[in-house]
Image 1 (cartoon, rainbow, N blue to C red):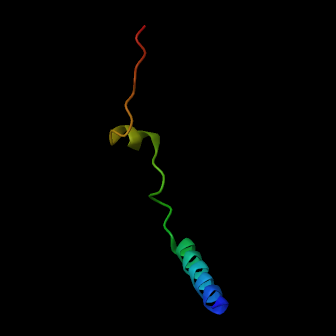
Image 2: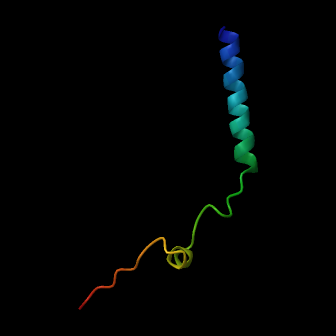
Image 3: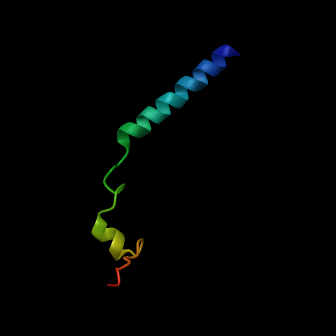
Length: 48
């Protein structure tokens, strides 16, 4: 029973490690201009 748990944990760690190695980070972050262009944030101007 303990052997199965160790094997499953090891396989899970291996899968997570392989995923981390081959992950694409290029589209993970947005630039400020992209955020405004896509309408994700509204600019609130100060009225003076």
